[in-house]
Image 1: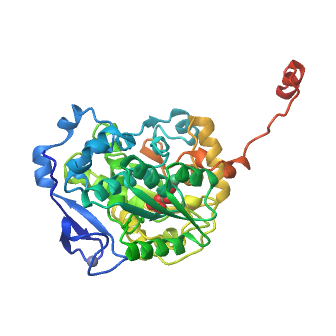
Image 2 (image 1 turned 90 degrees about the vertical axis):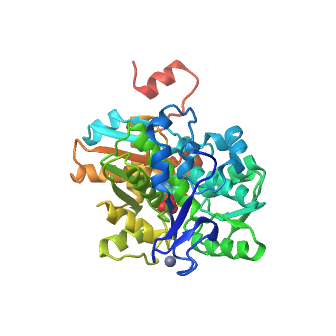
Image 3 (image 1 turned 90 degrees about the horizontal axis):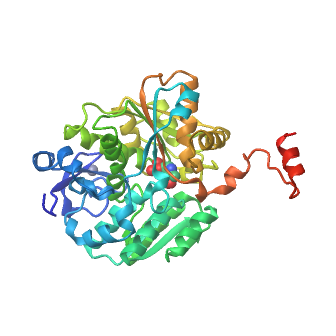
Length: 421
Ligand SMILES: Cc1ncc(COP(=O)(O)O)c(C=O)c1O
Ligand SMILES: [Zn+2]
């Protein structure tokens, strides 16, 4: 395929189709809460590109899927996506987790480790595509509201592309995430307010000063970037869908992205069915969970005081599409306690060598809970997505560290501490 991609946007609420160039953010008819899905030109893509072409493609990043990305002019950012940190976004490892699988009674358990992205979270997928779009549109300033990871990702990708980046984060965001953003040279506004307040503030600032807004659950390119995670899972499983995917949910944009990726793979005939998507929320930030349980089609504001800062969201901005992803894949949603999240973090570390941040460990807390109640059966092919690296938030985990041995620098002390004779 050449560097030009034809696609449309479809409103997730009123189903209206728009030409790609007509859209900046949300559905003009329905307003800000109406997110748009990309509708690729499947017939053309299917005719010109697919698994056999990918087999000989040595690009190991999200850009290997560019015909499915919402970029009108892929060539606009090609030099940057091939020669900067943007080139290493995605193609994260999919591990077979045998020891963890045995512990929870699963024979086919896999972990997709998205903590392995350049800024250490799945958000790089979204920010990279947003930056490519910003370059295509000739924007010079990008901005986002974020609990931390999306901001670090946008700041990193902006630094790679040489764009100015303005970040709105809650003043309670973990230090490591703020440090990351500062190191990447972004302007950081630590806002004394909740994530929900800063989301609106960032949007207003973008309107006021004409910046390109990356806000999750507003800019339609974020979920389309995140869908590459699902495309990779399908390819890494040799063009088969898993049976079940577990993913943590805050705003609902990641689960939407995964759904979009599996939808594309199904539409192109790469897989024969959709996996069921299981959304895992923190019980202390349960808006999507409550909506799903009550059968509602949309979310309502709820409490938000979980220690898993990345999913601490009172009003999920992509809740409508998150519920759709769960419903249309015959999946479901559960909620786990903060204590279960911390326990999962150390259990996963010990059984796999993967250090997940609290929001990443939330998917695993869901795994422990569902396998103990038989809601996932032994032979299902299950993928758990780790969405972020644990080094981003070491404060929460320090409460769960086992016994630390403080000793004198002598062999006797070593022996004493370890119970050796
Ligand atoms: C590490 C991590 N996990 C999970 C999520 C949840 O994603 P979403 O808010 O799109 O549901 C986020 C979002 O910030 C995140 O950073
Ligand atoms: Zn609409």
